[in-house]
Image (cartoon, rainbow, N blue to C red; front, side):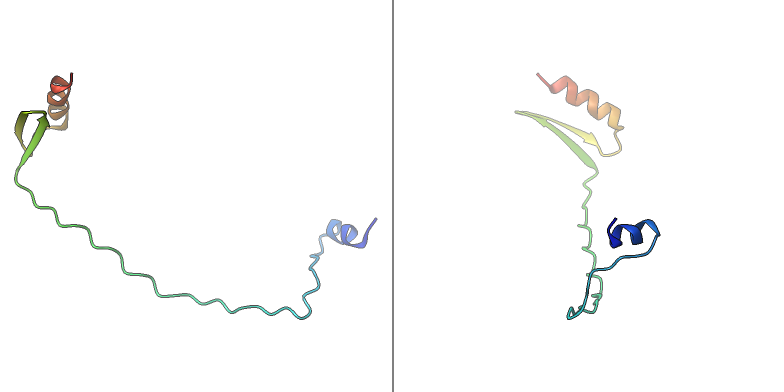
Length: 75
């Protein structure tokens, strides 16, 4: 059995020959600033558009109602 296998079975850490190798120091850069979210301008309305048909809803309209209207406009 080879020496490295015997050493591995004994739980000894086997390292390659590192003579002549240099290591680069680790540098940690400052974190980049986070992108600012886009400002949202709210008109208070929601437009559902299908072709020439525009259904203007209050922005507080429940999502289920908006989905029903969108389904009704679908072919």
